[in-house]
Image (cartoon, rainbow, N blue to C red; front, side, top):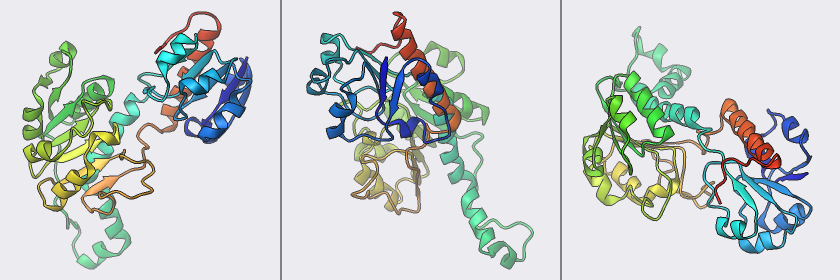
Length: 318
């Protein structure tokens, strides 16, 4: 089988091995691929792996050998799945691979606000501790998580894992979900409506997909409900947040801050009103990218492909 990997850099920037894929077919790996290069690069491919390179009906119609598209992510909105289904092309995704990494990233952001580790370490490097004359130097107010309330929007696998970690810190957990989550209730997590969640939480973490219903769910109205001491965390999708409204709320001190791993535009070549705000910690969409997480992604993507090859396809999304 001829296998083309169109944007392999994101799954494997060089610290993993393509050996598993090479054992099941003739593999061609491209670090990244522009839209105009998809057709020439995939003409002989029976199977294609893509993370962010889109496949439209027109593209698939021009690839007569194509039988399989493996999306190396959970979201698969880059694929016209209706067209793929009509053309007999199997489309798979990789669910749940990033649960641990993303949940841990949520708390990396939270702890930067509560323990100020990076700021304190920088002060030590600059000699401020030595200049203070005190054995303990604490220029910033620090906080414990114990006893605080964590609000989770979206109680899927990542939301649930985030809730479990919050509970381990001694936090109370409230959540909002589109469907009943009896397992969450069994763990002592309380389901509430969004208004209650926004107004009651000390920390709010977003774990919902980007849909027409969730786009800009964090806006002027929802921000007005939040405590001025609250922290917003978004490791899901940038489009969930109205960035102008969030920047205004932070600058006007109606919200303490935000920890974001995603922005509306990635990379933010046209800028963002949030970049440069001292109370906004932004990481470059890396919550999913720990080596262990990417190895899990690669293993599952290979398993999807092999399952398709032996006639027992799994994780089909068409």
